[in-house]
Image (tube, rainbow, N blue to C red; front, side):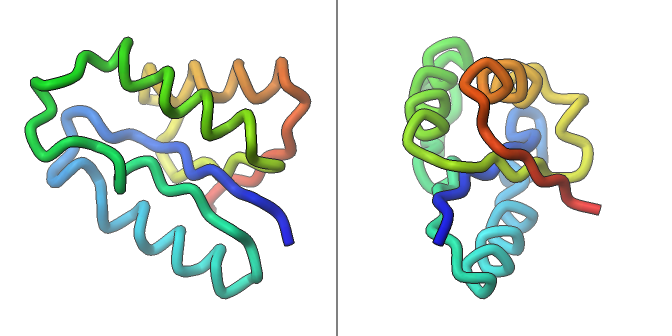
Length: 98
């Protein structure tokens, strides 16, 4: 069983893109992975935390995961691009939604 972090656009997305994150979580869980879903930790009021603060939580989750699963459109997200770079530096495995 692998530990998997889901990365994708959250900011400026309707309902923080929760549906896409939860679909990915369900699919990855059915494949036998333990999943870390960052939208579960995202505050209902996004003005409470700046994205530069929230990224620290996401990077910590990547640290304990084996793989990062990138949702479609991740490359348009500043945060996901940071997560990609960080995961590369940490030699994590990758998978991409198709």
